[in-house]
Length: 119
Length: 116
Image: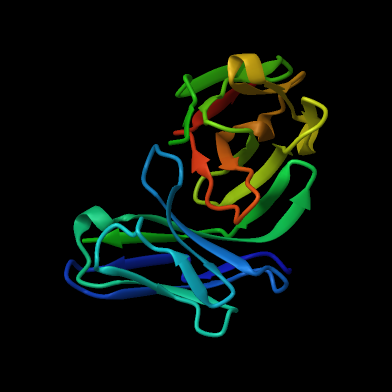
């Protein structure tokens, strides 16, 4: 299977602990996105990378959240000092930039997500 | 700022009936539009997309959607629903630009229940 993969699929942690999630994008995709999805809501954008460069991180929810993509391949999302409000599904997506008639756009392919529960 | 509204939180239809899920967007330029489907505990699967050209787009699993610029809408339709279509459906909008294309903005979703 050559889709986007995420690990772990589920994570239960105690408040105050640090957690790290991994995303492996589709191999030829140069863009990687992180989203958060809370119950009953659509995904909310957090940050994205083009290759190893993090081009947008102002939407990260607080300074407890950080993301890396050190070699332009897989990415990690870390949450430090977790809080109960961090409980959510964390989704990763990857894409290629496509040149179309109306301009550049990207089609994002999503992984299965990591479900985080903070007790 | 771009936004997406899905007015129907929950829709129930009988198997074999037709389906229309509504999506309205707000965006200051020409958008590109998507519909995704999400089964419980799963990630999002792309059903279809609109970038330009024909305003009626066909997707997977027998779904189609029509872009209506005058109404700022991108409604999803299926002529005959199957029990396996029960899931949550998300409409999303993203920018077309001469520079870098960025993140998608999602609606809050419509939960579809299919009755036997």
